[in-house]
Image (tube, rainbow, N blue to C red; front, side, top):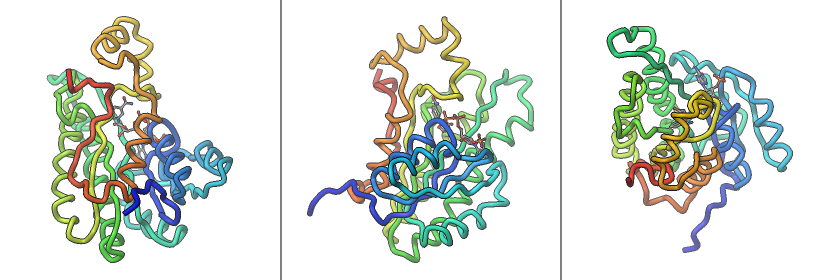
Length: 251
Ligand code: NDP
């Protein structure tokens, strides 16, 4: 059997696709042949233009995923626009930093709802479509903080650890239906999300000294793993958390 990374004819939904890691994943899936629905609060105009410039197909479906209110409509709209749904990339995420002693309920709920609760219910709605089709790929964007505690980010560490557990739970239940569920745990990736860390000379030096590869990751470093997990080449991989971190966890 030929091993293929070709996604021609596949239909994908990428959340948080207007920038950063989500943008790179959406562009890479389109380059591999998939039609891609982009979902986020802000318009994904730039991402859609990048995909169109490469001859790909993208539709910009707006959704605020801070609650589960739009999830059923988002999946229905994706299926209506693209004719089906084969790949879901749960990338949208936020982080809130504060000392544990003063961490607020608002910061807890915002991070856990966006990064974990919506991820589950969007996956549930997608899984119904995929199970009926007998195939599908769900890719969750986890974090190094799926494995480590971090500093002053308790709700983020809890949510991303939850994403790892949920990936395994969903993988178990969906494997018999031909649906694979995996996660990518990015290391330190240069995006808007990490701009403050990159700008802080001391923290930037500490981070670079700690990364065996000696450099920040690029969003494209994550996109390669996403194409693998979206393709037939990973059909026997499920419930796995793939770290793409320049060796951070190996150290
Ligand atoms: P960015 O802040 O650059 O992008 C975050 C994306 O999530 C944006 O597209 C944003 O869209 C979207 N998003 C946030 N809240 C919502 C919401 N309520 N509804 C819809 N979309 C939303 O971050 P990154 O690209 O760095 O991060 C992407 C993912 O990777 C996140 O899950 C993050 O936790 C994870 N990650 C990142 C790492 C890094 O080093 N950069 C490391 C480990 C994990 P909008 O602009 O519309 O809000």
